[in-house]
Image (cartoon, rainbow, N blue to C red; front, side, top):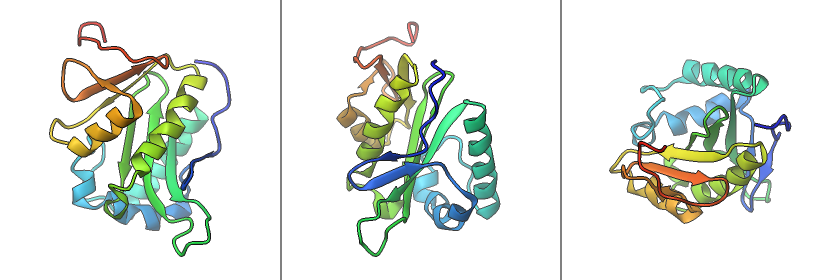
Length: 177
């Protein structure tokens, strides 16, 4: 992986992706703490409260400083709407192996934010020198499957494992992954 600096922000049409801050905790905890969101996330405890949120912000900052991961909070862009700056979800990439993960608060699902987040982070991850990105989803998480496929991730032999390699798509078996 190159020594390129991690981005401080990525902008999409409707979102700004930026590092998590302590002042964000009270606004993102209710979103990720919702069981209908948390149940799809392998590494998120439930119930998820403010203490978990503060611990996450500290860990994300440490991981960023150590170049272990790029973890970004997605907030609505300042477009003059009443919800400017409202967190909608988060996305992260583990820089050692290219695992990508994301989540959206329930009020923000089904309107394209997941696709926007991935389309911003995928080229950034490759620009940082990652040769491969991959994601694992629960087999019955059809919404996440559609988001990954929309962005171009292809399933591996296991229906819950998707990969993007060096900007080109290929199928792999678990043995070659």
